[in-house]
Image (cartoon, rainbow, N blue to C red):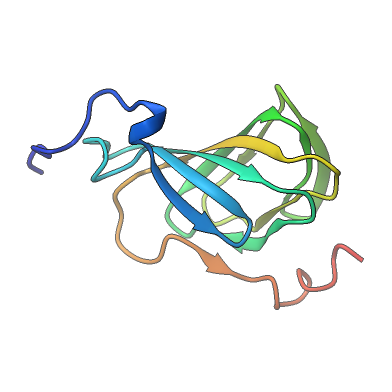
Length: 137
């Protein structure tokens, strides 16, 4: 692989690549094309009250979710926890998981995914499949 000539070594908040998704704005701080990263992606997610990233899986990536502020209902597989600032969830490759902000304040967390470069889809939504479409009750 060749080096990315226009990629950054330092990424300030103003240089982050912002992507607005249904479950909240994503500020990409590290990913291929922004940096020369091949093994790691980092995105800061601000999820407003009532929003959620429905059950999905990453067939080629593992993920760590580190909570900065607020709290959320975090699922990894069939296990649910309420996570708060300072907490972390590890999601193995291809494991179904979901994040739901059922609280009154925005939750902010870092999603750290690896690798940054792979073949195939980044995400597969399974929220309408059993048991995920009804597991939350």
